[in-house]
Image (cartoon, rainbow, N blue to C red; front, top):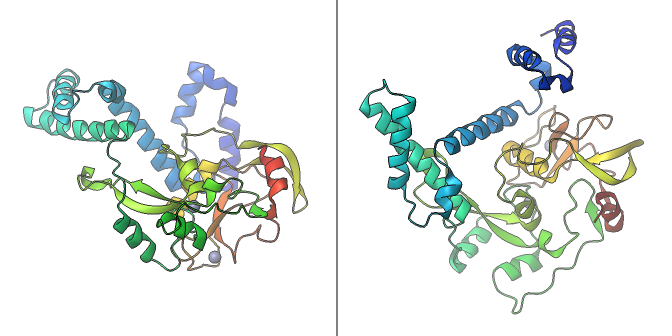
Length: 320
Ligand SMILES: [Zn+2]
Ligand SMILES: [Zn+2]
């Protein structure tokens, strides 16, 4: 798409406030977003929108929250309800097709019930912990590639009794302020539920730093957090530009986990399996949102010379 057609699109698009008027909403629905608008992080932005939409659809068929609170809930019980919904929504479809539909709906909703209850989570044994630590040298956070410190590893494996307190670093990454609290530095086990085939084998375990794990929380999509970047508690000068916004911590985690590798234009082989990765603004004049954030290794990080700051400065800017 040419620049002229992008300009034309911006002209045609309604004012953002106009989405409250139905004809304007219809007009916007019919406009196809130009490639230039969708080019950055398109995959995750589209995939997460689709999965959020599907989650709403499935929950709209049979409320997972109702099943979560219902002690008698089972996949079979959800199936009965899903079959009934299929009967009224698709009256002309074959019984076989309705059964197949209800079966997969029940399976996915039951997974969601387990997720909400937290019941699918089995605690890792000491052996599993040892194997996870031994699987890579050095062991790293699966989300950001951070190499765990030896004191954190000893605590994790139970070698220190009682666990030693992890000394907080004096210098932290301004855009990912890991180390302002002790949990940030500790090793945690993240449960990655296998998607294909609906699981069944239970959870996959992966090591995560406390920073990533706590800010990931139970969120599933890049839209599960605020739409605008986080306002900085205090404006700050960075590479000569005054910034007033910070990237949402969950955006950083989501982009790191879907990319897992450096986006340097000249090509780079660094991945989160062998390097710590950083999220940087593609251009400091723009907002730190998913259309202006990229994933880089330390060698290609455009912010490398300035992003590590005194922890007290990071606290002031983040407001904690
Ligand atoms: Zn991490
Ligand atoms: Zn790189």
